[in-house]
Length: 68
Image 1 (spheres, rainbow, N blue to C red):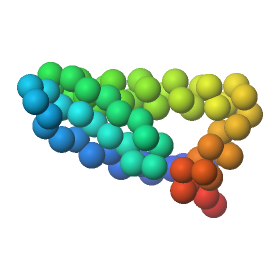
Image 2 (cartoon, one colour):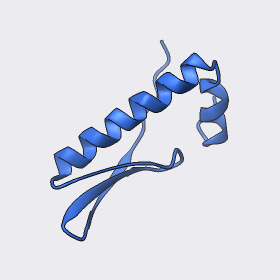
Image 3 (cartoon, one colour):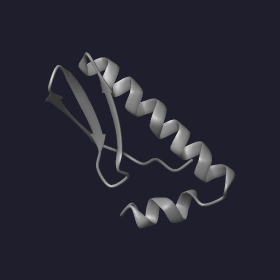
């Protein structure tokens, strides 16, 4: 199994937090840091599932700058 390490940035915006994943242009938001991170993880899982089903995961990761 290959492993990919991703780094998210969490920033305070207005009355909540936003967690962003660079390269993939995915983000999650919430009233707490944990809620923002959890939403981001859910969105990432969905993104992976869609690309796995379409057999385009490696291509999508490569386009995002995550190549071997």
